[in-house]
Amino acid sequence: MATRGIDFASLSLMDALDLAILVEEEAQERYEEFAAQMDQHRTPDAARFFRFMAENESKHGLELSARRAQRFSDAPRLVSRAMIFDIEAPDYDAARAFMSPRRAMAAALASEVKAHAFFVAALPALKDAEVRSLFEELRDEEIEHQDLVKAELAKLPLDSGLSDEDFVDEPAPQ
Amino acid sequence: MSATGTCEFQPKDYKSDLKPIWCPGCGDFSVVQGIYRALAAIGRPPHEIAFVSGIGCSSRIPGYTTAYGFNSVHGRSLPIAQGIKLANPDLLVLAAGGDGDGFSIGGGHIAHLIRRNMDITYIVMDNQIYGLTKGQLSPTSQKGRVTCTSRYGSLENPVNPLLYVLAYGAGFVAQASPTDLVGMAATIEEAIRYPGFAFVNIQSPCVTYGEEAQQIKGLKAISETLASLGHNPADRLAAMDLAQHYGEKLHLGVFYRNPEPPPTYGDLVKERQTLLSKDALPKERILDLFIKK
Image 1 (tube, rainbow over the protein chains, first blue to last red):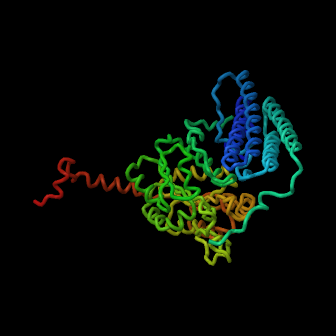
Image 2: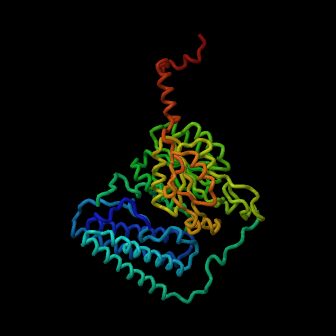
Image 3: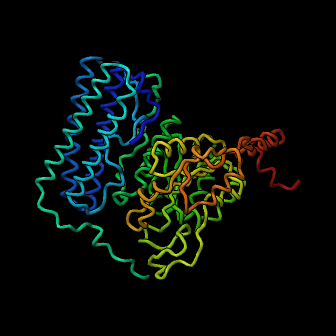
């Protein structure tokens, strides 16, 4: 989770909304990438879950885009994707071939926790009241997203206690 | 927002439609994102960029960009990149590959690009293993490493890529890692902007054959930025001193940047061409050179 060139103290509401949209877009794309990776490695259950997450991120992104359009019409975007990295998107190293749905959900839960931490950490630097209110709202939504993932986790059958690491072979001599 | 960072190109403009086939969790996924960002910051259109690689997992990287790409033969990315740069000096030329490609089969080429100061950025994704061929000992594998070709542990000391290129006189030497994604993109960008041969060693974990200590968590535990150590990148000897910790510490950032970059090979070629052009025969009389008078 990192940012580059963002001055939170002078962040305007339009830029804050754009930033929030970019965060959702980045997460959506990452989940889609993960789903494609799982398809490629014949891990359909994890792929299905990552697609579910991508749809959710897309939904949140569209909601934010509608708010942005209503308030600022089509004013050009002044922030870019280059300014954020892995705010709500799961880390690339969280994916594994043949990962279980439980592990996939744990990765998603960790990224929702990470996003919550981002908004919490940014709040003290914000000066604009509307931006602060938006960040508080986004922070609270991350808790809702965590609950959503936890609900999916609760639907899973009990864990066998084994992980994919238990099936790794020692290197065979060549 | 004061810093808008608006530019003509966005990272997605450099992303091709080809889906990476690396193992899920591979460090190279982050590296390619870092490259997209660095290229967007540089702002050159994809058709003005040539990206050459050798063979290996990481050498698939040109195909995942919209630049001109050449996934060449094992260890030969640098001579091919050199040829491209000489044939079309206006292109921004990048070369990439793994530690095996760069420091084993291709190890002999690096010295010559450095001494010529070719204006090429060379990115090595150093995972200390031959991943594509299923986990054999590579030139940067640690001594004692157990692999399928070193059942009782490697007897060899690893190559130190940073000292290797510093000793040959590279003008720009840096190290990055997916543990610091923003820093990695900034380092690649700085390397591309350097006028001459620039080397970036990226410690990119292999999730399938890499050891636990070489995964993101392990790398984070030993990483520190050179800036936080107060390192002066203009000090080559200090850079060599720090580079000796390769394998024990993960120093991130610029080890060395020549404060007075010498002319590139391309500059010298152009100078020579200008010098000789006044005595050059016109094209239609070029065959006269081969006719005895």
